[in-house]
Image (cartoon, rainbow, N blue to C red; front, side, top):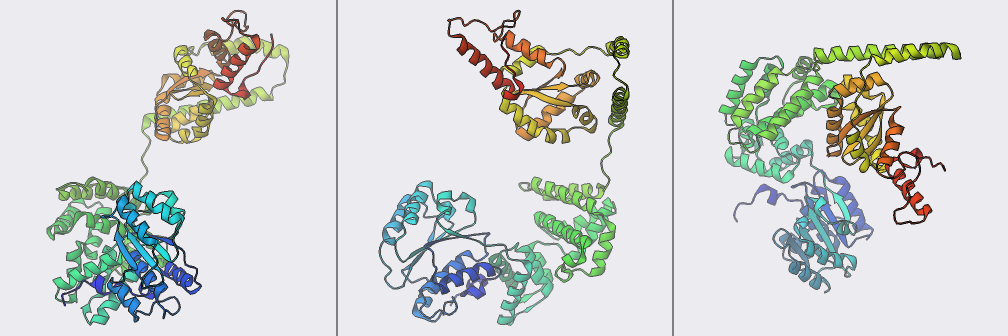
Length: 572
């Protein structure tokens, strides 16, 4: 007989053989034991985690007359036929190549007939997300009114592509990635059964490279066995997977965190000279930093023996780099990994990566001196305003005194240059303003504040949005001095950028004094013909409609712009 790959020879034949999915297998066994079998199941999860294997085991268990505790016997004719794929009542379909309406209609027509050899007719549809929309609709009809003694098992790696109408009619089981520990134990068991020699460190390299897929792990193991003549060695596993030795990673990490750029570049050259895969190197380095972070947080969180290093190594590494620096390193690694996905010169990116990592620091970025100075000035001004308010509140409310102080305060205010209000821009915003836009903006206002420069944030916290449209926003300031400061800076641009990041759309920002806002709003309504500008009365209907209808239109328009809470109706 010709050679068979390990993942085919050691494919699970019982629920107990399915690695890392104990909750799912126990649930399926209980359903068989209690005879609570559904007509449709969905097995979803990453590749190589046992979805199709579990489906075939389930098909054997429901049809096996000698099953024990929900497990098939694998000895009867029915079990052997299903294992060999020769039983006509268990049909495996690849939806990637049979995704049309006609194929699903053929299944629907044949499903009406009773099984010929087994108790249940089982359809296993692999990669079901590849079905066309018409094929899903054809399958939906069968799932709505399932024939007796027919079970559908749908398997997919992308459940989000399956219509909700299908998902609501199946029992869903999510298969998870298999842990490196479980993968290691399974490979160790297989090699012990076959009598092969192996190094445990090599098995850990393969388990980590498989990224949670048992089929991938066995395929890599098969390749290593072929390369090393049935002896699994660490160097061969590193070579086949393209991984980097822990010692090289250890040396490289020490050099970059100690800002030894030239030495780190030499180590990188050594790594590239061994033909290591660039993407695999970045993944190994991220995993390496992740192990250090876990050990730094709590040594109990990390199983040191699975990493190929000693406890003393992690003690040293934890002292070399702070958590903040390692977070920054991971961000740089992720960025470079995205950029080098489609390049044909990964060595250039890896050299740039090495320089950036060696220059990384755990210090927070400093605010430039100009911004710091402006922020200090604003803090002082705010403190002066607060002291002035407290002083005024503590004084007795004597009319003569306040009358005498009024001219002086007006004289002080006159020193501040008057703020020019862009009424044209305000009116353009009010033309399309709605209450809902204002409510939405008020909900987003705290998030917009958090995105501003600290100096500008001090200004804007003393303001509020009073009108909003899809294209603009009007912001009012209670204090004329702060309004003047906001108008001459880049605050409007910063607010616009913040709103664009949150909402995805650009809006123009304009500022108005709070004291003048009611008059601006009134003038706008008059300018647009909702009021007589001189007599402050409703304009007569040009086509002599009833006065009540004109009144309703005016009130409706005002409430649409400013909301029912901000509009007060008075009879002249």
